[in-house]
Image (cartoon, rainbow, N blue to C red; front, side, top):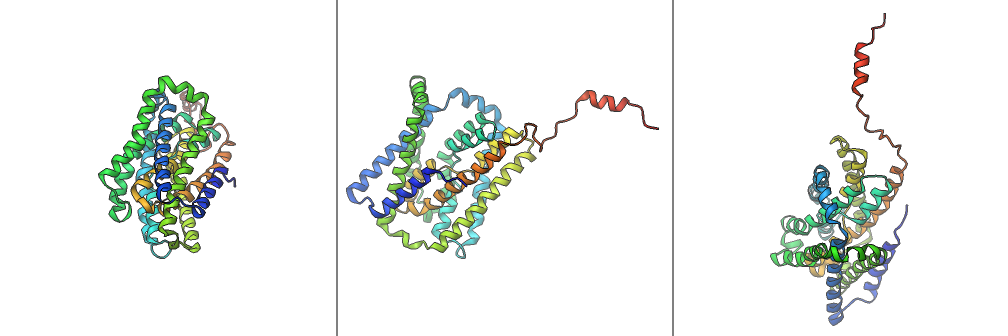
Length: 338
């Protein structure tokens, strides 16, 4: 299966943090730079999203409600069920990281890319990912407060304010300035994409540097990491099946089912990392480890699924068209066989 080169950069960043962690003043500078980088990242998200596309997407409210339910109801329910795996397979800190993974919003870029490859409803995927990110700015911290509690996330009203200032305010600013900078952002989409990924690398370096300084990596053994990967593989498989066949049961079209599957089964590294740095503080590196592993796993598996979906025949074999009215009339009036 394909391995995203960006994941290699993420692993290299983790290795750099292990060898040369930021300490003292340099840690403060790295933390401030990562905060500014993430704010700029969400500013670009706001500048890219067409307000008209967002308003048009509201017409597909059933699809968006389905994706939000998968992201913020079904995923957290499965995360809570994984509590039964402690301490046999998971340690309590790894379980908290796994539960946090189930609380973060869906992705935007990869959901759009895979939906496009599979010939799905791309505008719906754009709006679904964007709506999920916006809702997650508020819902994820609230879910963390209720499900993780003080022992896990250290949630407070101040944490929510920090997340809103860091993510929501820049997004709104990008939307407001879109009439003046939208064309520039569209023309330089490839260059600004490096800004996106560079921002995430900076956040990863800051989080894992803090983890190295705190010495929390001694809490994780190779056996526990293997168990975590197995649990996440089951989690991803369950969500992929639920989103595909659940959307079929709800009578969505093939194109909408593809958008629901890719947007409803994935979790955003871009949104999850800054939230974790605020909610978990010095323990953010261990908290985001399940999210980083799940991120690579979802990219690999969904790339294969999208490629196979692209070869589906045009008439969806899972949805048989209803017979036309003239055909029913002809059958009804035809003479009976003797």
